[in-house]
Length: 477
Image 1: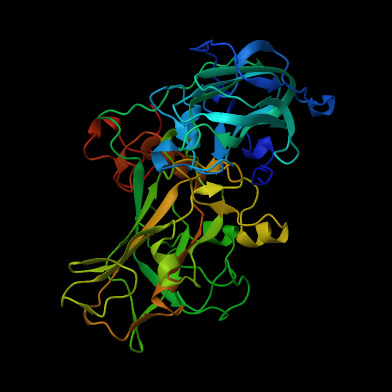
Image 2: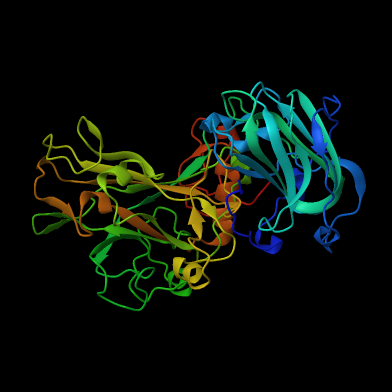
């Protein structure tokens, strides 16, 4: 069985590696000798990269590292739980023989051993492999009669990526580790403080409230420089947005319909028709900026000029319902989780939709077109099991649109300009003033608060705010 391919990560200067502060040194909790080791191979000398960190030996290199796996039994059993240092958590694969688990150490290191702390679902036959690029792998250990418990596999070699590749299970379940530990030579760094889950951490979000700006058949992301090439869009936020919009033009324009004047960003989505009439949202649209990953302290602000599209114009009812960004579907009155526009809504109610955007960035490309031209696939991805995939390692705020239109009663002639009810999507073009966005992310998302547009949590007034009542940036204490 060959592990699934993984795209190469961005260079470390763009966030492709793990923060050095995530490297944790701690003693191994179990030291049972290896049993059933059929063969131990040596890593080829070519694997020892020039940037290998020759420092303190016998260092735990895998604590808090990025992980991925061929599958997970459930969201609460994702691969990240095998490197969190907590034996009450674990990774568990789907119930099949051919499964793999991978850890990214952030840089190439001389390696000494791997310790597998098995749950009851252990492997009878498996290999340990290492690589510098997640493409070419060398086997450094092979086990053919595994007995579970805690196995320590010693070897000599180097690499950035280390993976377990299962070929035969010992039980009817999948493979499951409490911990997967990689030891070798590396710099010892004090661990980061873990997230504190108490009454001070209730949410991790702030809001941007924006009203209707204009309608225009333009899309500066999909059809840049081509006025009239798109279906009709409804724009909120920056009033200047058109087919020729750039980052500089957004930043230069001070006219915004958003509450926070330092948000020069543009947000747009397909116009909604009732018959031939375009329905304009008549109340401020709520745009949530949230953490899409479990470890909300690792969320970083959007890079200037990042733009993306959330949703799929070609979605079917089934793919729309099961899309990673779907929240409640179409709503009105007592109707929710409808994956098509309801045929009728109680008079006086409004049609609503909520949808979440991908929140993991590849660290390289600011636009979908730039990523496609380089043959790198999408530049944005959704988190998997609460963490960003290795191909898109940088967690940015997860945007969630919540929009309402003043339309009710007979809805049989209500439609989207983009086509089917499932063609719902929206676009985002970041042009926040960086210092304000940085402070809001730090205060509200990283700080575990539920903030209004000023960065103030009504229920935690002692935590202060980012902007004063006139929306001026408050100096840090």
